[in-house]
Length: 106
Image 1 (cartoon, rainbow, N blue to C red):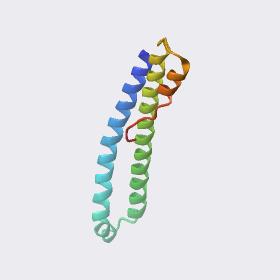
Image 2 (image 1 turned 90 degrees about the vertical axis):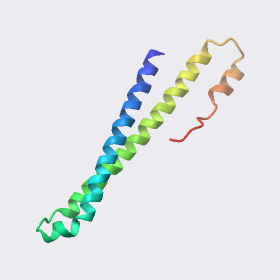
Image 3 (image 1 turned 60 degrees about the horizontal axis):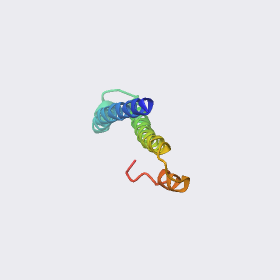
């Protein structure tokens, strides 16, 4: 039970880091896109590669954010199963409660 709580906390920390990193990277991408013509005129030839790299990092952070959120949902589901395990009721009722979908947004 303690391990699931730690897994939940680690996923929450990953989500916080993803959000902060994604926010900063999106800001950098927007700044590069706004200044791309001035950079090209100044002789910086790698502007398209810089834009593509920043876009790739932003997409990767978004994917990591979604995976961390799914991990948190699975930890909640596992804790629900552990909580129901010691409940002295028929298996059909436990199974029904365990199979309830996660009602939230990922």
